[in-house]
Amino acid sequence: MRRHRSLLLAAVLTLALLLGSVGAAAAEEIVIVHTNDFHARLEPIDFDGERGGIARLAGMVNVIRSLYPDRVLWLDGGDTLHGTTVANLFFGVSVVDLYNQAGVDAMAAGNHDYNYGADVLLLRAADADFPILGANTFYKESGESFLPPYAFFDVGGLRVAVLGFSPVTTPVTTHPKNVEAIYFEDPIQVAAELVPQLREQADLVVVLSHIGYTDDVALAQAVPGIDVIVGGHSHTQLDEPVVVGDTIIVQANEYGKYVGFLKLVVDGGRIVDYEGRLLPTTADMPIDAAVAASLADWQGQLSERLGVVIGETAVDLDGERGNVRTKETNLGNLVADIMRETTGADVALTNGGGIRASIPAGPVTLGDVYTVLPFDNTLIGIEISGAQLLAALEYGVSQWPVDWGGFLQVSGLSFAFNPNNPPGERVLSVTVGGRPLDPDAVYKVATNDFLASGGDGYDMLVSDSYFFGSERMDGDYLRDVVAAYFETNPTVAPEVEGRITIVE
Image (cartoon, rainbow, N blue to C red; front, side, top):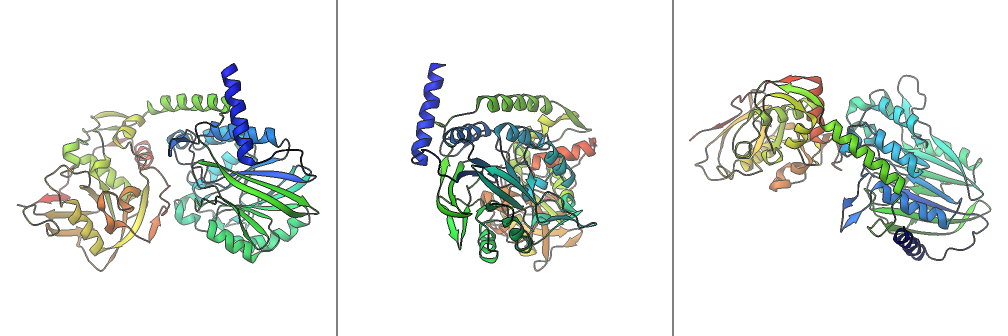
């Protein structure tokens, strides 16, 4: 206990030094602590050593609150509820529970907070002790607000209005079905209407934004009267605040690597001084023990959940290393088919090296799927030319017969290759949907973020055109998509169909 108190005191002193002098409060002084693009990183991550985790974020904010009593407002910029297994398998309930305990004051709804569907987001908003804001989100049918547009807070003798925004690209960067009943209005247009109203009711107007740094700058330039923009979506690391006109813009990178700190001194409804920085959430920072205990409980529930039977396979599913890396297998076909069906793509490509185990005939547990697909690969859809698709297939067989992880499992196409030809000239024929591949046509291709970012050397799959998911590559995990398929298709029996033919 004595050692724990000493460590806590050391952490308090360390943070006090990082934050500069802390003395008696100015007549009107508040602190905004801010996070964004957390993507449910409830457990610490490996980033130049251990960083982050919800218990550490809460511990650091607790210290800041002790240094600035009754003057701290914690704002989160969104993309918070989805992104890790301990969040996804509970539809974000675990994240909201831990954010409640940590004492978050408000959150913007990010595009990936809709990944469970709009109705589930409303349920999580009802669970939250803090408002989840979306001033530019409206029901298509009625035109009414989908989420609360703003909230008021009394902090340090000041009345603060917080106005939240979501990106207009949300119907593209989450599954369109998730938001089919709502639409997203231009934040500049909505802010131009609401900011003047809020200025009449509050000492400070803060925009809690999940529209990205570039659009934050445009918003500050277009709409006067915004005191602070707390940003998100672009994962931008602003080590110091950026001032655009009279608006202070801050953003704290991603995944809880930092706690953003912004101290404001206000006189007569104007910010007369400010100080801002990012505080690294390193392993020497304090941890909130109660939040850590709750996280451990959620991890225990996760272990139980992984043992749940979600379906059945009538045949052995072949994920053996030497097979998925050299030839078509029924498990490779199943995974690729699920990817193509989920996205509505013409074709699906996934690397054999991402499939790490077989599943015997019989019951299939959630843990089985997670063993087969252990990596944090997400499902996305890209648009590429037929020539690029052919180049990918050529590259996929370039090292055959070596059991190489870049060998492709496919759906929606079939091809034949001759391994005796030089690499780059091995593919003899390709059909897509029963028709010969057209090098000039544009194809919708479902794949994973590893390949789409050039992983395994697939530079030809790097695209600027996405029809499903996001270039941020932080959407649905492939393993969760496969697990969801088993839950809606209880018995599977995939076969080897001749999608990949070796001609010698």
